[in-house]
Length: 430
Picture 1 (spheres, one colour):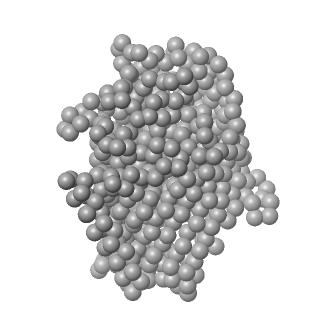
Picture 2 (cartoon, rainbow, N blue to C red):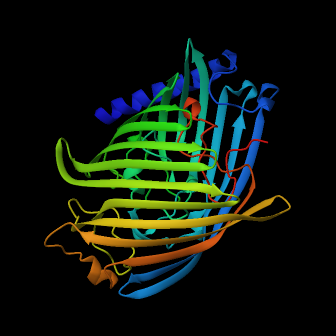
Picture 3 (cartoon, rainbow, N blue to C red):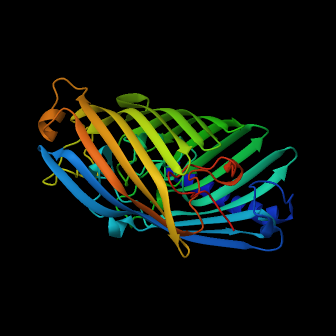
């Protein structure tokens, strides 16, 4: 009965979203995004593509073995439609990691969606949303529906300086969900809220379980001005690891401060996820992360420090995969990851309309078991108490440049775009 009520609510809200988007065409043309001037004369369509040619050496990777692999990672095609006057915006992002990254990307400490110590491929339809924008007195409002980023936590890591993802990706962000969200902005304050499906994708071509839309919700409050942005958010996610429902639920908290101005960028964030049933908590996982970058001439230097906790599940014959979905209470341990990373990146000469930049990243990781006794002992499994990884490669892009990912409508601030190390990948509609 509860799910039926949620589905009815979602459909009513979706119909209201389409009505509001249509009505927005007659509202104040300056409400919402800082839209390109061309949109005042007619619809604007922009498109682009990018990807990263990446080599990674992990020492040790597992069982005291050094592993070296190469990939095409984060291959994406993006498109954006802005209606005349900028009252409606549609965003599309297709991610082809299901083809290029089937085995996952070496990334010690990372986990999620059946992968461990490898970053999992994201879904083909990474983002497909429509947003209507309008004004109500002094406030600016927007409503978004589709599949994309839930208003929770910080920006998606692929729009931040490092190629390698932090361990806390599944603690600090919620993405690839079918959602309907609203946002209202007034002065420096912004409030966002959303209903969405709790289930995580089960493979790169999986679609959200639409009978679960509305079983989960989130809210995020942001204050911003003069390059500084501070946010706090909460999410209640029903059974994320069991698509059919019935698994442990997540209660998630996030707080962060972000600054960007004149080639300088900094982010500090805290996140916590409690897994349990009802009001009972079975497991808690915490994360602290700080990262920053600075442009020195044409070179971008970035550093990141992270302390994050993750669950340990039994691994199959492939040491980088775990059963999916996990059995109830199948966590066999908890591991804390202390990680220091540094990168340097610089643009390369362009070729016709193609943009290039090179990068090198170095990271050292120290995993520590938080369970005593523990079935999973990091030093025995990896073959060392401290791990190292070295990554290098080139970003390639053409057309529309990479935007800051994770916010829609009045939550977008074109003046505070994400720093993409070594390449000006900010949102560009020209």
